[in-house]
Length: 139
Ligand SMILES: Cc1cc2nc3c(=O)[nH]c(=O)nc-3n(C[C@H](O)[C@H](O)[C@H](O)COP(=O)(O)O)c2cc1C
Image 1 (cartoon, helix red, strand yellow):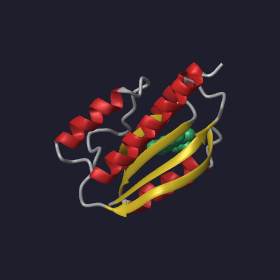
Image 2 (tube, protein in one colour; image 1 turned 180 degrees about the vertical axis):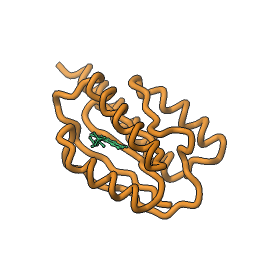
Image 3 (tube, helix red, strand yellow; image 1 turned 90 degrees about the horizontal axis):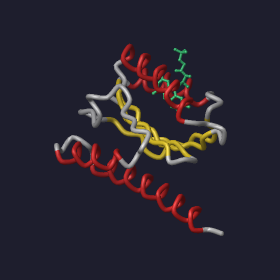
Image 4 (spheres, helix red, strand yellow; image 1 turned 120 degrees about the horizontal axis):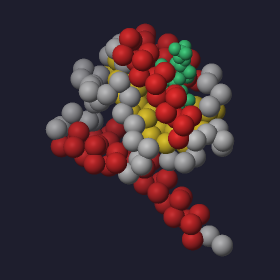
């Protein structure tokens, strides 16, 4: 199986309702294609981990790449895996993405989430939090 993590720039007009709609599509297709993973939105950027059969992952990434709801997709990790990190989620998402910390550490606690993946995701979450608090205090 293949696991890919990418980051991208969200359309500035995107809102939670758009993301909810996106997730309905993603989860339906991912269920069909045996794909699992996690999506994180930090207010500006997406980070997504997508894992499953290599051909399905790459086909899905090609579709995602041309989606106008984001741009500038850059892969930050691509590797062959034996076990999934997010086996139970057709696409894990929490709008209050702080919730990911808990879900992630639970997963990491179970020893299923690759430490490097966990670190990349946690750092991305922390960056978003720092950016928001910088904006909040900037006047
Ligand atoms: C950030 C982001 C993540 C997405 N993740 C997935 C995904 O995991 N699986 C998926 O099938 N589509 C995903 N999509 C949606 C696809 O780009 C595309 O709109 C969708 O697969 C089309 O589905 P349909 O042909 O069934 O209408 C994502 C889009 C964005 C912007």
